[in-house]
Image (cartoon, rainbow, N blue to C red):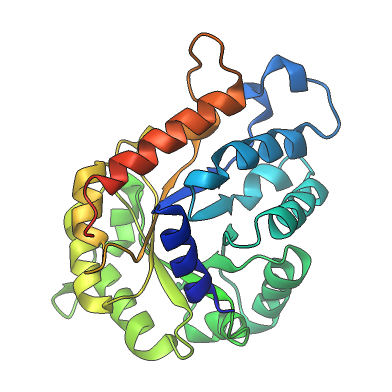
Amino acid sequence: MTFTTKLANAIRQHDSLLCVGLDPDIARFPGVLKGRSDAVFEFCRAIIDATAGYACAFKPQIAYFAALAAEDQLQAICDYLNQNYPDIPIVLDAKRGDIGATAEQYAREAFERYKADAVTVNPYMGFDSIEPYLQWSEKGVIVLCRTSNPGGSDLQALQVDGKPLYQHVARLVAQQWNRHGQCALVVGATFPQEIAEVRKIVGEMPLLVPGIGAQGGDIEATVLAGQTRDGMGMMINSSRAILYAKQVDGEGFADAAARVARETRDAINAYRNR
């Protein structure tokens, strides 16, 4: 099954455009996990079990694991997802971007070691740095286009032939690189008008949209700008707001995460086409 088909099925099955980001920060773990050698795995497993019913995808951010020398726990988490929630896509957020020979190894890392369904990549070095990922025709290749951070404008808003650079990236991916229908784009929720511009360029192509929750992106504006005609085509990511949700009486950390994931899913759905 291709990434795009798996994503579409998960959106329908879970009635959700919510992507749950897995950014484990041990400084924010609950006391019950402090000092455990498997704390990263157990934290993420609990979050996954609590939120899977509300998610169309899970997005582990590789840097959070690598900084802790916890790549083995990331691999175990991906295995856990594939075994227990095989209908939900895994998006490995790695933002890789290097020359072809190195990109081949990064592709193997994402798709063989971690068995991810998709990986985020940086297009700055051009097509030959992206092509190795495209050889995996059933896997998703999610290209950075218009990122949610303020500094993204330093390059992405530069004018090239009268158009901002991010629009050139969107057009290049949609018209030349998307050979197997496997590509998607990262477009931040902090720029809803620019999400709309990208949607016009790329048609039905999926968008990974970070920036709601802790980064302050507006849910209504994001959904209205980026959804496809049938209310699909988006993975709206929330990480910290779900992982480290403020608990109310009687809740553990996983219950709090489930509550916020459900509320976020429902808030997104309030503006979806049906």
